[in-house]
Image 1: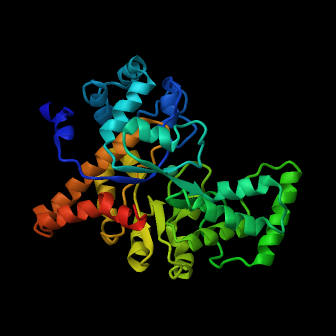
Image 2: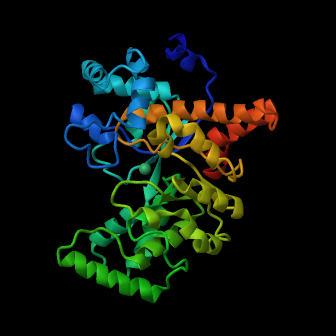
Length: 379
Ligand SMILES: [Zn+2]
Protein backbone atom coordinates (compact mmCIF):
# COMPACT_ATOMS: atom_id res chain seq x y z
CA UNK A 1 0.00 0.00 0.00
CA UNK A 2 2.92 2.32 0.69
CA UNK A 3 3.63 2.65 -3.00
CA UNK A 4 0.06 3.84 -3.55
CA UNK A 5 0.43 6.97 -1.45
CA UNK A 6 0.85 10.33 -3.08
CA UNK A 7 4.04 11.05 -1.13
CA UNK A 8 6.45 9.56 -3.64
CA UNK A 9 4.79 11.52 -6.44
CA UNK A 10 5.33 14.92 -4.87
CA UNK A 11 8.79 13.86 -3.67
CA UNK A 12 9.98 13.08 -7.23
CA UNK A 13 12.16 15.76 -8.79
CA UNK A 14 9.81 17.80 -10.92
CA UNK A 15 10.47 17.75 -14.63
CA UNK A 16 9.74 21.22 -16.03
CA UNK A 17 6.61 21.21 -18.22
CA UNK A 18 5.18 23.78 -20.61
CA UNK A 19 1.53 22.86 -21.23
CA UNK A 20 1.27 24.18 -24.79
CA UNK A 21 -2.43 23.40 -25.29
CA UNK A 22 -4.81 23.79 -22.39
CA UNK A 23 -8.12 25.46 -21.52
CA UNK A 24 -9.49 27.08 -18.35
CA UNK A 25 -11.24 25.51 -15.36
CA UNK A 26 -15.00 25.81 -14.85
CA UNK A 27 -15.80 28.54 -12.38
CA UNK A 28 -19.09 27.21 -10.98
CA UNK A 29 -19.64 24.55 -8.29
CA UNK A 30 -20.00 21.21 -10.05
CA UNK A 31 -22.51 18.55 -9.03
CA UNK A 32 -21.97 14.86 -9.83
CA UNK A 33 -23.48 15.26 -13.27
CA UNK A 34 -21.22 18.24 -13.98
CA UNK A 35 -18.08 16.28 -13.08
CA UNK A 36 -19.20 13.24 -15.09
CA UNK A 37 -19.98 15.28 -18.19
CA UNK A 38 -16.47 16.79 -18.14
CA UNK A 39 -14.87 13.34 -17.80
CA UNK A 40 -16.05 12.29 -21.25
CA UNK A 41 -15.97 13.67 -24.80
CA UNK A 42 -19.48 12.19 -25.24
CA UNK A 43 -22.66 13.96 -24.12
CA UNK A 44 -22.61 11.74 -21.03
CA UNK A 45 -22.74 8.10 -19.94
CA UNK A 46 -25.91 6.05 -20.66
CA UNK A 47 -28.50 5.85 -17.84
CA UNK A 48 -27.30 3.70 -14.96
CA UNK A 49 -23.65 3.94 -16.02
CA UNK A 50 -20.89 6.27 -14.87
CA UNK A 51 -18.11 8.07 -16.76
CA UNK A 52 -15.83 6.97 -13.90
CA UNK A 53 -15.89 3.47 -15.45
CA UNK A 54 -13.18 4.42 -17.93
CA UNK A 55 -9.40 4.65 -17.94
CA UNK A 56 -9.75 8.38 -17.23
CA UNK A 57 -12.18 7.81 -14.37
CA UNK A 58 -9.89 5.25 -12.77
CA UNK A 59 -6.92 7.62 -13.18
CA UNK A 60 -8.85 10.37 -11.34
CA UNK A 61 -9.55 7.97 -8.45
CA UNK A 62 -5.95 6.74 -8.43
CA UNK A 63 -3.99 9.98 -8.76
CA UNK A 64 -6.29 12.88 -7.84
CA UNK A 65 -7.82 11.32 -4.73
CA UNK A 66 -4.59 11.75 -2.66
CA UNK A 67 -4.48 15.46 -3.57
CA UNK A 68 -7.92 15.72 -1.91
CA UNK A 69 -6.61 13.81 1.18
CA UNK A 70 -8.28 10.56 0.13
CA UNK A 71 -6.81 7.10 -0.27
CA UNK A 72 -5.89 6.16 -3.82
CA UNK A 73 -8.69 4.42 -5.69
CA UNK A 74 -11.52 5.39 -3.33
CA UNK A 75 -14.94 4.72 -4.89
CA UNK A 76 -16.18 7.47 -7.20
CA UNK A 77 -19.03 8.41 -4.83
CA UNK A 78 -16.51 9.10 -2.06
CA UNK A 79 -14.37 11.12 -4.42
CA UNK A 80 -17.37 13.21 -5.47
CA UNK A 81 -18.46 13.66 -1.83
CA UNK A 82 -15.00 14.95 -0.83
CA UNK A 83 -14.95 17.21 -3.89
CA UNK A 84 -18.23 18.83 -2.81
CA UNK A 85 -17.00 19.10 0.79
CA UNK A 86 -13.85 20.99 -0.24
CA UNK A 87 -15.66 23.12 -2.82
CA UNK A 88 -14.59 23.87 -6.38
CA UNK A 89 -12.26 26.74 -5.47
CA UNK A 90 -10.17 24.65 -3.06
CA UNK A 91 -10.17 21.59 -5.36
CA UNK A 92 -8.99 23.77 -8.23
CA UNK A 93 -6.31 25.46 -6.11
CA UNK A 94 -4.92 22.12 -4.93
CA UNK A 95 -4.89 20.41 -8.31
CA UNK A 96 -3.51 23.34 -10.31
CA UNK A 97 -0.77 23.89 -7.74
CA UNK A 98 0.08 20.19 -7.62
CA UNK A 99 0.35 20.14 -11.43
CA UNK A 100 3.39 22.41 -11.00
CA UNK A 101 3.42 23.37 -14.66
CA UNK A 102 5.95 26.06 -15.66
CA UNK A 103 3.67 27.85 -18.07
CA UNK A 104 0.20 27.46 -19.63
CA UNK A 105 -0.54 28.27 -23.28
CA UNK A 106 -4.31 28.69 -23.17
CA UNK A 107 -6.79 28.16 -26.01
CA UNK A 108 -9.54 30.64 -25.18
CA UNK A 109 -11.72 29.74 -28.19
CA UNK A 110 -13.84 26.94 -26.69
CA UNK A 111 -16.63 27.96 -24.26
CA UNK A 112 -14.34 30.71 -23.01
CA UNK A 113 -17.13 32.33 -21.02
CA UNK A 114 -17.68 29.22 -18.85
CA UNK A 115 -14.08 28.76 -17.69
CA UNK A 116 -11.31 30.76 -16.04
CA UNK A 117 -9.51 33.34 -18.17
CA UNK A 118 -5.76 32.90 -18.72
CA UNK A 119 -5.19 35.61 -16.07
CA UNK A 120 -7.35 33.70 -13.57
CA UNK A 121 -5.58 30.42 -14.39
CA UNK A 122 -2.23 32.16 -13.76
CA UNK A 123 -3.50 33.65 -10.51
CA UNK A 124 -4.76 30.33 -9.11
CA UNK A 125 -1.78 28.22 -10.24
CA UNK A 126 0.90 30.81 -9.54
CA UNK A 127 2.34 30.19 -13.03
CA UNK A 128 2.16 32.43 -16.12
CA UNK A 129 -0.51 31.82 -18.74
CA UNK A 130 -0.44 33.03 -22.34
CA UNK A 131 -3.15 33.18 -24.99
CA UNK A 132 -3.36 31.05 -28.11
CA UNK A 133 -5.84 32.78 -30.46
CA UNK A 134 -8.36 30.80 -32.52
CA UNK A 135 -8.45 31.69 -36.20
CA UNK A 136 -12.11 30.74 -36.68
CA UNK A 137 -13.13 32.98 -33.74
CA UNK A 138 -11.23 35.90 -35.27
CA UNK A 139 -12.96 35.38 -38.64
CA UNK A 140 -16.35 35.14 -36.92
CA UNK A 141 -15.73 38.42 -35.08
CA UNK A 142 -14.80 40.13 -38.38
CA UNK A 143 -17.90 38.68 -40.06
CA UNK A 144 -20.25 40.07 -37.42
CA UNK A 145 -18.52 43.48 -37.40
CA UNK A 146 -20.39 44.26 -40.66
CA UNK A 147 -17.66 45.72 -42.89
CA UNK A 148 -18.73 43.81 -46.00
CA UNK A 149 -17.33 41.10 -48.28
CA UNK A 150 -14.93 43.28 -50.28
CA UNK A 151 -12.90 44.14 -47.18
CA UNK A 152 -13.42 40.85 -45.34
CA UNK A 153 -10.15 39.18 -46.38
CA UNK A 154 -7.99 42.21 -45.57
CA UNK A 155 -9.85 42.74 -42.29
CA UNK A 156 -9.21 39.13 -41.22
CA UNK A 157 -5.54 39.47 -42.12
CA UNK A 158 -5.31 42.70 -40.13
CA UNK A 159 -7.13 41.15 -37.14
CA UNK A 160 -4.78 38.15 -37.15
CA UNK A 161 -1.72 40.40 -37.26
CA UNK A 162 -3.20 42.51 -34.45
CA UNK A 163 -3.84 39.35 -32.38
CA UNK A 164 -0.22 38.30 -32.95
CA UNK A 165 0.89 41.20 -30.77
CA UNK A 166 -0.67 39.59 -27.68
CA UNK A 167 -0.96 35.89 -28.54
CA UNK A 168 1.82 33.32 -28.26
CA UNK A 169 0.42 31.38 -31.22
CA UNK A 170 -2.68 30.52 -33.22
CA UNK A 171 -4.98 27.53 -33.40
CA UNK A 172 -7.28 26.26 -36.13
CA UNK A 173 -10.16 23.83 -35.72
CA UNK A 174 -10.26 23.05 -39.45
CA UNK A 175 -10.59 19.40 -38.40
CA UNK A 176 -14.03 20.29 -37.01
CA UNK A 177 -15.02 22.45 -39.97
CA UNK A 178 -14.73 20.13 -42.95
CA UNK A 179 -11.62 18.14 -42.10
CA UNK A 180 -7.92 18.21 -42.86
CA UNK A 181 -8.04 17.11 -46.52
CA UNK A 182 -8.35 20.73 -47.62
CA UNK A 183 -6.82 22.33 -50.72
CA UNK A 184 -3.31 23.22 -49.50
CA UNK A 185 -2.92 26.37 -51.63
CA UNK A 186 -3.35 29.93 -50.40
CA UNK A 187 -6.70 31.19 -51.80
CA UNK A 188 -6.53 34.33 -53.95
CA UNK A 189 -8.29 37.61 -53.20
CA UNK A 190 -11.15 37.07 -55.66
CA UNK A 191 -12.06 33.68 -54.19
CA UNK A 192 -11.89 35.06 -50.64
CA UNK A 193 -14.19 37.95 -51.61
CA UNK A 194 -16.70 35.60 -53.26
CA UNK A 195 -16.67 33.19 -50.32
CA UNK A 196 -17.06 36.07 -47.85
CA UNK A 197 -20.03 37.35 -49.83
CA UNK A 198 -21.76 33.97 -49.60
CA UNK A 199 -21.07 33.64 -45.87
CA UNK A 200 -22.09 37.19 -44.95
CA UNK A 201 -25.40 36.74 -46.85
CA UNK A 202 -26.07 33.54 -44.86
CA UNK A 203 -25.40 35.38 -41.59
CA UNK A 204 -27.69 38.23 -42.66
CA UNK A 205 -30.38 35.65 -43.39
CA UNK A 206 -30.12 34.45 -39.78
CA UNK A 207 -27.51 31.67 -39.89
CA UNK A 208 -25.16 31.51 -36.89
CA UNK A 209 -21.73 33.08 -37.52
CA UNK A 210 -19.92 29.73 -37.48
CA UNK A 211 -17.12 29.53 -40.02
CA UNK A 212 -17.21 26.38 -42.15
CA UNK A 213 -16.33 27.83 -45.55
CA UNK A 214 -13.19 26.06 -46.79
CA UNK A 215 -11.79 29.06 -48.66
CA UNK A 216 -12.14 31.36 -45.65
CA UNK A 217 -10.67 28.78 -43.26
CA UNK A 218 -7.62 28.49 -45.53
CA UNK A 219 -7.36 32.26 -45.82
CA UNK A 220 -7.03 32.44 -42.03
CA UNK A 221 -4.50 29.63 -41.91
CA UNK A 222 -2.22 31.32 -44.47
CA UNK A 223 -2.60 34.72 -42.83
CA UNK A 224 -1.56 33.16 -39.51
CA UNK A 225 1.50 31.54 -41.11
CA UNK A 226 2.55 35.00 -42.33
CA UNK A 227 2.93 36.15 -38.70
CA UNK A 228 5.62 33.51 -38.09
CA UNK A 229 3.93 32.42 -34.85
CA UNK A 230 3.32 28.70 -34.25
CA UNK A 231 0.03 27.46 -35.71
CA UNK A 232 -1.72 24.63 -33.87
CA UNK A 233 -4.02 22.16 -35.66
CA UNK A 234 -6.53 20.04 -33.80
CA UNK A 235 -5.98 16.50 -35.10
CA UNK A 236 -7.22 13.07 -34.03
CA UNK A 237 -9.61 12.35 -31.20
CA UNK A 238 -11.97 15.10 -30.16
CA UNK A 239 -15.66 15.39 -29.38
CA UNK A 240 -18.44 14.13 -31.64
CA UNK A 241 -18.40 17.33 -33.75
CA UNK A 242 -15.17 16.25 -35.42
CA UNK A 243 -15.12 13.55 -38.10
CA UNK A 244 -12.43 11.21 -36.83
CA UNK A 245 -11.33 9.93 -40.24
CA UNK A 246 -11.03 13.52 -41.54
CA UNK A 247 -8.88 14.50 -38.54
CA UNK A 248 -5.98 12.20 -39.48
CA UNK A 249 -2.92 14.50 -39.59
CA UNK A 250 -1.61 12.50 -42.56
CA UNK A 251 -4.27 14.37 -44.60
CA UNK A 252 -2.19 17.52 -44.01
CA UNK A 253 0.85 16.22 -45.88
CA UNK A 254 0.38 18.38 -48.98
CA UNK A 255 -0.33 21.44 -46.84
CA UNK A 256 2.78 20.74 -44.76
CA UNK A 257 4.84 20.52 -47.94
CA UNK A 258 3.30 23.79 -49.16
CA UNK A 259 3.92 25.59 -45.86
CA UNK A 260 7.46 24.29 -45.29
CA UNK A 261 9.00 27.59 -46.38
CA UNK A 262 6.52 29.87 -44.59
CA UNK A 263 8.72 30.22 -41.51
CA UNK A 264 6.04 29.32 -38.95
CA UNK A 265 6.08 26.12 -36.89
CA UNK A 266 3.01 23.86 -37.29
CA UNK A 267 1.93 22.05 -34.12
CA UNK A 268 -0.15 18.88 -34.48
CA UNK A 269 -2.27 18.60 -31.32
CA UNK A 270 -3.57 15.35 -29.71
CA UNK A 271 -2.99 13.18 -32.81
CA UNK A 272 -4.22 9.93 -31.18
CA UNK A 273 -5.06 7.40 -32.60
CA UNK A 274 -2.94 8.79 -35.46
CA UNK A 275 0.08 9.58 -33.28
CA UNK A 276 2.34 7.38 -35.41
CA UNK A 277 1.29 9.30 -38.54
CA UNK A 278 2.00 12.55 -36.70
CA UNK A 279 5.42 11.26 -35.69
CA UNK A 280 6.16 10.46 -39.32
CA UNK A 281 5.16 14.00 -40.38
CA UNK A 282 7.30 15.52 -37.62
CA UNK A 283 10.19 13.41 -38.89
CA UNK A 284 9.62 14.49 -42.51
CA UNK A 285 9.05 18.24 -42.12
CA UNK A 286 11.41 20.58 -40.27
CA UNK A 287 8.59 22.92 -39.16
CA UNK A 288 6.22 20.24 -37.82
CA UNK A 289 5.82 19.36 -34.13
CA UNK A 290 3.40 16.98 -32.40
CA UNK A 291 2.00 15.99 -29.01
CA UNK A 292 -0.16 13.23 -27.58
CA UNK A 293 -1.98 15.53 -25.17
CA UNK A 294 -5.55 14.65 -24.22
CA UNK A 295 -5.01 11.03 -25.28
CA UNK A 296 -2.67 10.27 -22.38
CA UNK A 297 -5.32 11.36 -19.86
CA UNK A 298 -8.04 9.39 -21.60
CA UNK A 299 -6.08 6.14 -22.03
CA UNK A 300 -5.14 6.10 -18.32
CA UNK A 301 -3.18 3.01 -17.37
CA UNK A 302 -2.12 2.57 -21.02
CA UNK A 303 -0.62 6.05 -21.33
CA UNK A 304 3.04 4.99 -21.18
CA UNK A 305 2.41 2.57 -24.07
CA UNK A 306 0.90 5.35 -26.21
CA UNK A 307 3.74 7.72 -25.36
CA UNK A 308 6.25 5.02 -26.30
CA UNK A 309 4.51 4.59 -29.68
CA UNK A 310 4.63 8.34 -30.27
CA UNK A 311 8.35 8.28 -29.52
CA UNK A 312 9.03 5.64 -32.18
CA UNK A 313 9.49 8.07 -35.06
CA UNK A 314 8.98 11.57 -33.66
CA UNK A 315 12.38 13.29 -33.45
CA UNK A 316 13.07 14.17 -29.82
CA UNK A 317 13.28 17.87 -30.68
CA UNK A 318 9.74 17.73 -32.18
CA UNK A 319 7.54 16.39 -29.38
CA UNK A 320 5.79 18.71 -26.91
CA UNK A 321 3.73 18.32 -23.75
CA UNK A 322 0.07 19.30 -23.53
CA UNK A 323 -2.83 18.24 -21.33
CA UNK A 324 -5.73 19.61 -23.42
CA UNK A 325 -7.38 19.92 -20.01
CA UNK A 326 -10.77 21.63 -20.18
CA UNK A 327 -13.08 22.43 -17.30
CA UNK A 328 -11.98 19.94 -14.64
CA UNK A 329 -8.74 20.82 -12.80
CA UNK A 330 -8.27 17.06 -12.39
CA UNK A 331 -7.30 17.03 -16.09
CA UNK A 332 -4.68 19.77 -15.64
CA UNK A 333 -3.12 17.78 -12.78
CA UNK A 334 -3.42 14.30 -14.32
CA UNK A 335 -1.86 15.49 -17.56
CA UNK A 336 1.21 16.91 -15.87
CA UNK A 337 1.75 14.22 -13.23
CA UNK A 338 1.05 11.45 -15.73
CA UNK A 339 3.39 12.86 -18.36
CA UNK A 340 6.22 13.05 -15.85
CA UNK A 341 5.61 9.42 -14.80
CA UNK A 342 5.27 8.16 -18.38
CA UNK A 343 8.32 9.98 -19.68
CA UNK A 344 10.34 8.58 -16.78
CA UNK A 345 8.98 5.06 -17.38
CA UNK A 346 9.50 5.07 -21.15
CA UNK A 347 12.96 6.63 -21.19
CA UNK A 348 13.90 4.60 -18.09
CA UNK A 349 13.11 1.41 -19.99
CA UNK A 350 15.36 2.52 -22.87
CA UNK A 351 18.15 3.11 -20.35
CA UNK A 352 17.53 -0.16 -18.50
CA UNK A 353 18.02 -2.24 -21.65
CA UNK A 354 21.16 -0.36 -22.59
CA UNK A 355 19.80 1.50 -25.63
CA UNK A 356 20.05 4.96 -24.10
CA UNK A 357 22.38 6.52 -21.55
CA UNK A 358 20.86 8.05 -18.42
CA UNK A 359 22.29 11.41 -19.49
CA UNK A 360 20.52 11.18 -22.85
CA UNK A 361 17.25 10.27 -21.12
CA UNK A 362 17.53 13.32 -18.87
CA UNK A 363 18.35 15.59 -21.82
CA UNK A 364 15.45 14.30 -23.96
CA UNK A 365 13.08 14.62 -20.99
CA UNK A 366 14.05 18.26 -20.65
CA UNK A 367 13.49 18.87 -24.37
CA UNK A 368 10.07 17.21 -24.55
CA UNK A 369 8.80 18.60 -21.25
CA UNK A 370 9.65 22.25 -21.85
CA UNK A 371 12.71 22.92 -24.02
CA UNK A 372 11.05 22.28 -27.39
CA UNK A 373 8.06 24.47 -26.50
CA UNK A 374 10.33 27.26 -25.26
CA UNK A 375 12.22 27.18 -28.54
CA UNK A 376 9.21 26.90 -30.89
CA UNK A 377 7.10 29.54 -29.09
CA UNK A 378 10.11 31.73 -28.25
CA UNK A 379 9.11 31.76 -24.58
ZN1 LIG B 1 -8.26 21.64 -26.59
